[in-house]
Image 1 (cartoon, rainbow, N blue to C red):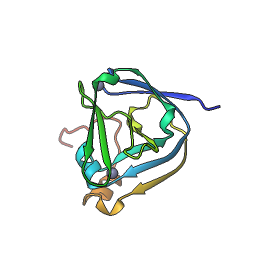
Image 2 (tube, rainbow, N blue to C red):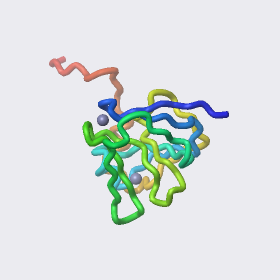
Image 3 (cartoon, rainbow, N blue to C red):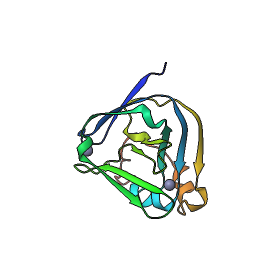
Image 4 (cartoon, rainbow, N blue to C red):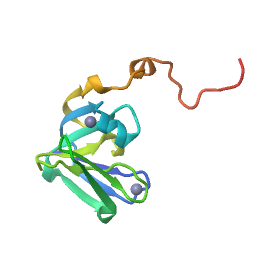
Length: 139
Ligand SMILES: [Zn+2]
Ligand SMILES: [Zn+2]
């Protein structure tokens, strides 16, 4: 028996539940994921296709099929936040890790399309951390 985990888009219009036993957690650095996220990579969990259940807002979801790589994006048309989607092959459901309201359980993880990551990524990841915006007053 697996436990459920809940997720939503930013505005909360789209809500879902899914079994919290993901096969793999990919940090994908491909150029398509950079474009859809506006960031250096996306964090995608892959679950079983029948493990997802929409709770609210399914009619607000827009799906986009990129013509190459069998690549898909799905998002809430109110806030633009990423939401889960079934892969084009139908073999897995992809969940944006940041949409989850708790800790995902997964069997393995990998960084993929690592050679496509933008210049400066590693330097930024190794930089100093702050809990909020750093104080920008003169020192
Ligand atoms: Zn939304
Ligand atoms: Zn990607």
